[in-house]
Length: 118
Length: 502
Image (cartoon, rainbow over all chains, first blue to last red; front, side, top):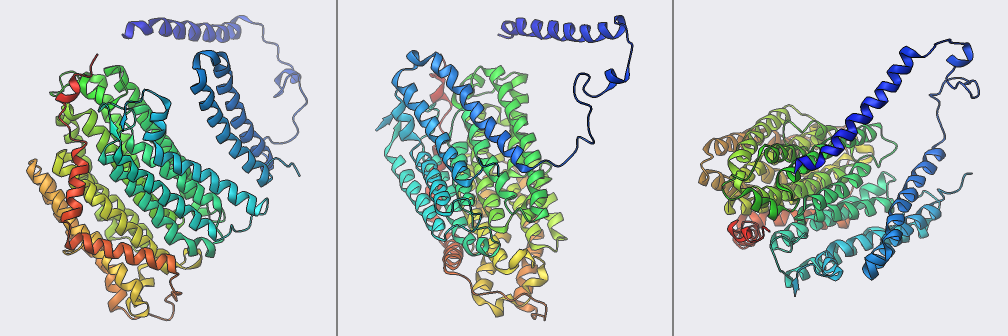
């Protein structure tokens, strides 16, 4: 039974070796000419202003958490849509229940005012 | 009606109490948010009674489960009297929570509909945790139970202690879930099944079918359960989480969550691993000894009554582990009996504690109880009943429960466990009776708290729980035979499942 997993093990080893090889190889083989711009936190972005460990408004966290919930909903919806015919009526009803539960949460969040930015 | 899980409808019927409770939780959530909108003020007081109605409906659905028969003992959702019995226990804990918490939540400005929703969802999780025969579904129930309880621990946002307890509980709880899940993976690797009955069939009656993977997986599962039931040495989170959580929620955690973890522990180990009892019996033996000795010794020097009750709940986990180690029909029956008594007396003790503690839980020291018996005889008498029962005094349910656990241990030859249990109980007399002594034989001083009148819901819950504890102590017969019949449904001969192997 365990032999069946050998390809996964080989894949894991090969990808680990390839990734490590690229990092190590470029470190030793590549030319290193540092300039102040290259050493910045974002080489091709805006120069950072102040410390990154600042306090953010809780509103950002709310949006992030709500995003995860509805993002995961799509993760479930897409495979369901692909196999829609095979799952038949029972699959349809199950998905309705799933969306119904999420809808209750959505109504709660809406009424609670978590979607308002102000 | 026979349930064989051939159609979707069978799942709905087998999970009817859970379905009722989940739908009710969503209903309460919507009702609450439509009533108060964006304002973060208190919900209407009716929300508690609506919640209680949902618990009663689920209890009725649970009773209806008895009319169902299952086609095979390997069904994903067990329909046996053990499940019905343990479901009633969890619903009892939820109902007691609603009754004891109303005034407390109001006084702490915590009367939020969300608390009731989370309690209902945690109860659904407990029912799935203890009622399933598939390790993946059991894990689902474990998480559905734990996540709401993590939130409930930290629900008092204005209290730093509450936040600290919640964070510790969450981190260690997530850690223990990882152990649990890893154990499931090992067992699946070793037996090619996550179904408890099929795992038992693969291992065989004599345990010869078990390889190292299964044994490691079993040990990891035991660690996961050990965290949830707070057995020493996996108890580190308990005092902080129990102290930080609002008192009624501590009661719910100590009674409901622990009962669910124990019921699932019993089901998993008796159904899946009867062939490996030689191995896990020894493991549980040492867990029980460590838990009984460790928790009782720490509780001796604990002046804070809330923390003392936390250690007391750990020590009771030790007594229940003794019944689990015995792994017999008598052991399982005494286990169920003790769980019921434990739920009643623990929730009762926490209810008195929160009545005495006052706003902000200021009065938690044992000194606060000085003269309580004379100032408020009702609270004094019921608290004395709960303390005597926790200590295991004759004519209380706690005593009878311990006697049956002792009998189960001795029958299996665990004389050492029986002796440790008796000694640990003797030690526990000191810290339980110290509180009772303060209540009746110490004069109240000027800075003793004034205990306000006890509201109706709390009074009903306290008197009913105390009466039940005494009743179970004086006339245990009828209830014990019920526990025996429920336990018997778990102890079917493993030979009957051999035919299930394909």
